[in-house]
Length: 429
Image 1 (tube, rainbow, N blue to C red):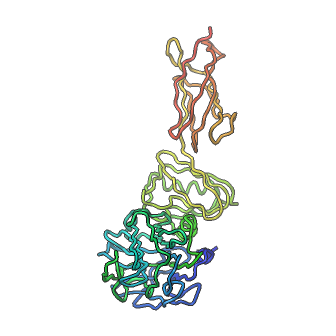
Image 2: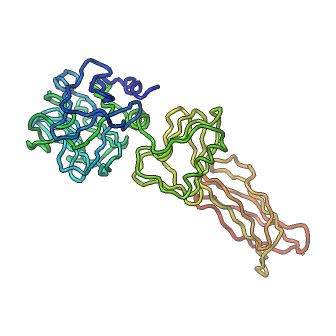
Image 3: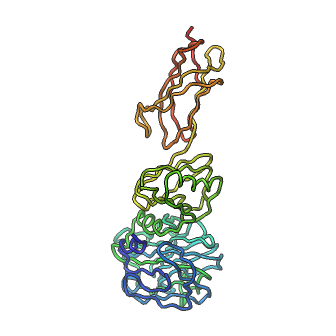
C-alpha cells in the first residue's frame, strides 16, 4: 500500500503531499502558494518532489476550514515531513495555525531545535525536541492535542519518538478545547503570531522542505504511539541505502560491502527487502556501526523472518518491519571452556565438552549447544548467536587415552558477552 494510502487509512481529514503542488489529496482544501518551489527531490516516500522555500516570504496558505482551524477543537493532530538545509536564525515557522493569542504551531527554534507549541487565551504549552534538526536530513514531526474531556495532554513526536521535555512539565492544557484559530500556513506567516505567548514576527525557514502533511480532527486525531511511529514515520521514511532482493548469499555479499563502516544519521540507514522467495533468511553484519542519532538502523520489508547477526562490533539494535515480517537480532559471542588437571593444573587435551540448554532462555531445554574436544591447550570454544540470557548445563570428561579423568559437571549462563569458564577435572587412575 502506498504511503498516502497509509495516511488516509488513519482517518486524516486533509493531506498535502507537496509533490509538485499544494493540492489536498483527501478533501478539497487546496493551498495557495506564494513563491514556493517544487523542483527538489522528495524527502519522504511516495513522492517525486517536495515543497521548498528559498525566500523569507515564501508560504503555502490553507483556506480556513472547520476541522482544521475554524472551530474550538477538543482533539486535533497534525503531522508531516520537514527538512532544513541550513542552521536557521530563530524562530522560524514550519507549520502554524493562529495569531498572537492562540496557536497550534511547529517552530524551528534556537540551534535548529523544534518547539511544538499550543497557545490559547487560558494556557501556553511548549514541548521541546530532544535533538537539533541536522542539516539536509528529513524528519517526521507530529503533534496531538486532547482537551481535558479526553486525554488532557499535548503529545509531540520526532521521527515517531515522543518528546517529553515540556513547559509545563505535565503537558496538560487543563482546558476542554483549543480555541478557533486563524488560517493555517506552511512557511512564512502573513501576520504577527506568538511564541511562548508573546507576539513575534516569524519568517519561513530559508530552504526548508516539506512533504506529506496531514491534519486529523476528532476521534481520528487520537493517534497512538504505534500509529505515529510505524504508520506515519516508518512507512514514509526514506532509506540511505537500499539492498536489492536476491538469494541469501547474494544479499549477504551486498551487506558485506558495509563492513567496517559507520552508517550516518538518517531516518532509515539500510532497507532490506524480502529475499528470493520471501523465505526466512539471515544476514551477518561485520563491524557495521550506526550513528546514535539514526532513527532506524535496518528496515525489513518482507513477510518472512529476517535474522540479523551482529559480529565484530556491529551494533544494529533499532529495526523496522513494514511488510508484516519479523526481525530477530542476535549477538555473535563465544563459549569457551578450559579443562585443567585438578592436581597439576596442566591443560587436558582431548577432553570431551558437552553442553546443552537448561530451562530459562530462548532455546528448548535439552537442545545440544556444544559437543567438542579440547585442543592442546585444554580449550574448547565455539561461536554462539545470542538473543537473550540462556542457562546451560553439561559435563567434561576424558575416558579414552591416558591420563583418564572423572566426569566434571558444567553449568552457567550465556550472556551478551558469551560464556567463559575454567574447569578443574580430577584424574581417574
